[in-house]
Length: 239
Length: 239
Image (tube, rainbow over all chains, first blue to last red; front, side, top):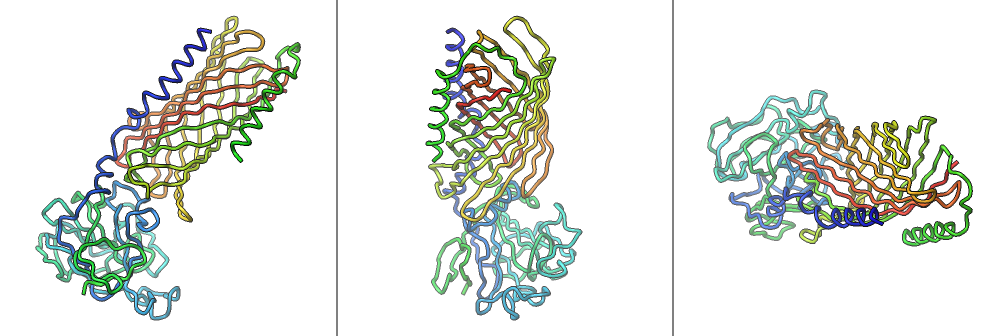
């Protein structure tokens, strides 16, 4: 009988007393960011004309980056492509054989907000064609050619997968919102020409906690959004 | 359906309680075990969700085989399957389906035996695949651990016995969609513990009531914590 009492006591003790302590508080900051974060930087969409949100949003289904780690800052990242008449390519969707067949490849990119260029890479070969990632892409160059902008307020923007040799700013330059900085490419861990954009809370390359990016004054399916977060499937333009 | 299955097993085992003779001696060396029960757990996985704690409940199924050698050493194989839903009231839009499939092997050598009490010590390997899914999108994480296991057994009398098994994994290999890493005690702490009461129905059948406790902690930027409590009812077939 004593055995049963002892076992029962241990069971009840384990079941009710230690779950909170063992799970711990890590992630509370992430929850707070999810629920309450307001982007500090005055952001505008970093491209001209109308583009399609391939991935973006706060859920697992819309965001596409929720599953790709908190520690790389990508939780609220966007993948965005230029679309004309519903097609990614003048050859029709699924028919692009080269990067040049895709509307997005070579499209102009702007600084999304005021800040200072603190890091960039401009010499990685673009992937040879859509759907193929070059053999030399590894954990150290997943973003391919990229620009990191310090908005001088604790927020850092990363524009990734740019076209080799097209970045026209240098580390240390000050940029203003809307200023051209480079062109879209297909470099790094990219399965086709597109822009990867996210903001994070550290200046380090693919490191830190991702922050929601709220853009000011853009059109979503021809409706003016004064302050919003584009979501997968939407067509957006800045004017 | 699952509840019905649990009921059927309960009825089946209870009916055998009064139906079998207890006169034969218990010398069988092989044992198949099937058990099912309730799992209550909590999970934090910042790799895929900005949620500090999910809670989940569900049914767990276990199938096992154990062989006892001439020297009373134990070889055990166990397969387990859990299906549930990860829930958080704070951000319910991030709730997910959750399934976990596990396979363990252990070999335990008897190091002490006196009267009704025996102690075994050995190694245990445990592999599991956790699947997180939402609609048609899913991600999985594979874990492989290797640890030290010990088992304490106490035979109260011919019919009644208690067993407790404690396993402390020493190394973890973890493979996810974004990383493949090896961790040991400095970053990974884990513990498996179960305690079971067994009632011998006959020379061929036992019923067993078990409590399982499992805790995993991985101290990396994508913090991972999981705690599981299980209460299982099972039946053993000895031959």
